Amino acid sequence: MSSKELEQALRNTLNRGTKLFIPYIMAGDGEGGVSNLENRIRFLAEAGASAVELGIPFSDPVADGPTIQEAGLRSLANGTKLQSVFDALQQFKEKSPIPIIFMTYINPIFKYGIDAFFEECATSGVSGIIIPDLPMEEEQLVHPACKRNSIALVRLAAMTSTKERISELAKRSEGFLYAVSVTGTTGARAEHASNIGDYLQELKEISTVPVLAGFGVSDADQAKHLGSFCDGVIVGSTIVRLFNEEKEDEIKQLIQNSVICETSV
Image (tube, one colour):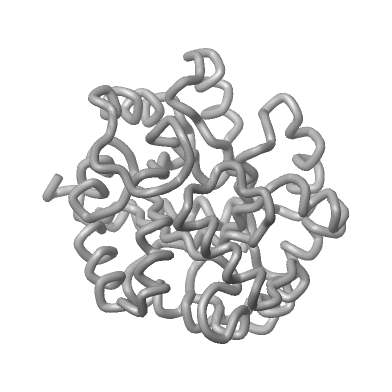
């Protein structure tokens, strides 16, 4: 699925009056490692997810909180390599039920080789990529390769950014715009800043692609609240924890209780 097809798939969901819900999972986490990846993606699609954000385990995950850091260590202990993730995705790319977006850091991409990495993404059915430690000023390192292979480069907007910077990020983002809804790393939060609604609404007004809030979204009430200001949410640490605790029924409830219709907002 190309970057344009990713955006269209998300818009098709929105056009049905449903908010977007993108769960994050760590590739290779859990029993079976990467061999269980297809089962988890299918489970999330059947539960109502709009797409899957797929983390690549990395030894220095600067944007991740404790829950996802621990998932990365479990995945590495399972022997997960970037190539093994590509190999697993290639086995079911033609029948993947939803778009897959990578979340990784710039070092693994450099080590694999920038051109080779994005060519492999395209042949593995990856539609987009999120690189939290790649600043906008350095994105030309990878953007030409993204364009050649029709991989959407999803930009992250931070609450601490200036209006000028947020405007530029919103203009550049492809597939969707990732609105970081906390100041800090990933992980559950009891509450969000009082101005979170204004921040998300401002992004929604200037972005030409769907806007999703992520970081610190841990339950359906938070998902519905943040989603009422934008196009949906991304949930990571809670999904990772529930998979690790083998509480798939709670994952399904979380997704279905978060994916609300526009008319009920």
